[in-house]
Length: 164
Image 1 (tube, helix red, strand yellow):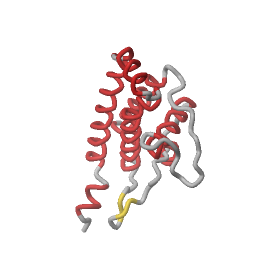
Image 2: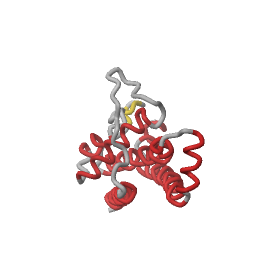
Image 3: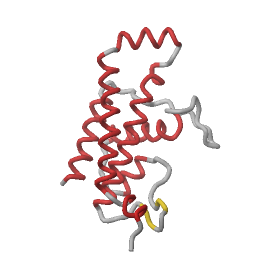
Image 4: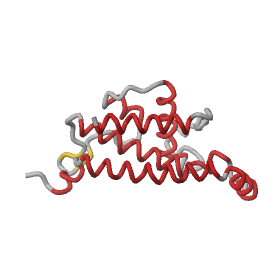
């Protein structure tokens, strides 16, 4: 008999619900950023906050949402996420690796977006420098003005794949 922990950890509806909640909140912050760019610039200058740091709250949420969507795809393809009360899949927030492991084909821009979000979720959305032993300095976040739009396309592609 499957215990409750394993049952909940392998429940695609629960992972999808979490993904949608995270994506909704990320989209609210993204929309606010777009609508209030002038106010944001004044606040940023006054507090000496970099423009990249101002975006991290929404980007961290997007990263977590994409991780949950990719976990949904793994479950949809018949694989478990939890066995014997332990997470048995990617534990390092590497979204590119997750996408490859669930056979989700990425465009070049989508791969770059997932690479950026992986770093943001792992460390740069929380700390001023990489906290891993190799201590990398990750510098390419939202370089392309179309990154927000490409992210939305990526999320919608994942939704369609999960729901098909």
